[in-house]
Amino acid sequence: QVQLVESGGGLVQAGGSLRLSCATSGRSRNVNGWFRRAPGKDREFVAAVSWSGTTTYYADSVKGRFTISRDSAKNTVYLQMNSLKPEDTAVYYCAAGPPYYSSTRWPAESLYDYWGQGTQVTVSS
Figure 1: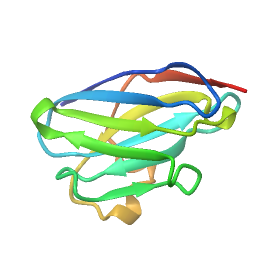
Figure 2: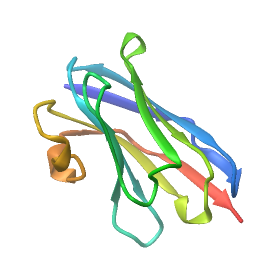
Figure 3: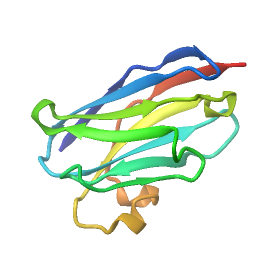
Figure 4: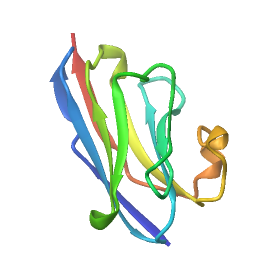
């Protein structure tokens, strides 16, 4: 069992920054991903990080603006979001999956077996 609790969402102006946190408990080694669902759209992959924190993978739409990281001592995964755009508005979900898949598979939702409840991010223009 893995429990995931997201926090850090909110309302920010375009060009601003937010940092999302995902507190994890349970299975000690996971690949952790962030996904998002914008209004009227399917959920999409944003970023993922290996269980060791040494490997990351990003969607093209956020590359260079978002940074995913983990603090293993705090059992927390972060998503630092800079230069936010109105199109980043969505509910953001943290997810956990088994650690043994290659990074090329991390964008697949089916890889993840645990999900958080989501946190709303709204970017105003």
